[in-house]
Length: 201
Image (cartoon, rainbow, N blue to C red):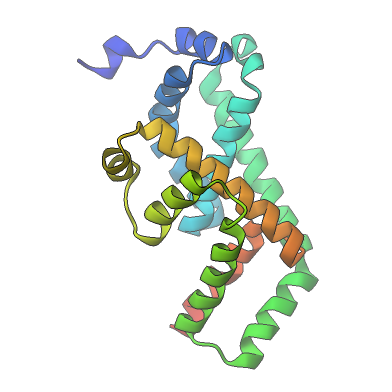
């Protein structure tokens, strides 16, 4: 069985518009790798790239009713990805005061990479408490234990698509917590963590 004989994008878009999660999963895995590389070229940070990727597909799912009217889904998807990623980068660039304050805080404390990681993980663990336990467990397996979606799905007896949905739930919860507790986006926090980690290595 090859993708050429099973992948019919027009039918998939109609199915997704009607709420078919299996069809959505096919779209996701068809574009996932190329879209990841596209976003990474813009942001240069793996963790941020993954979060943006999940966020984009969440947007597609939430606006699925529009999909039957999309003539070129690939072009549409990459256009959404480009605009969303540039908006995030623009938002981060406007958060100069918040970012510089955070950087100065870390520098004044003379934290090393390990301390920075602990500080970030502490925030994540606190934020995860407001997320449904199933999504929290899956997030920790994927991000902290480094397990793949396939490994988590096999261990928990669920589909890869279910793992992806739980990851979206967790990431959205973390973003809300970052905005509420830190005053700026999780994307900005991830950029600072990535940059400072590189500096202190």
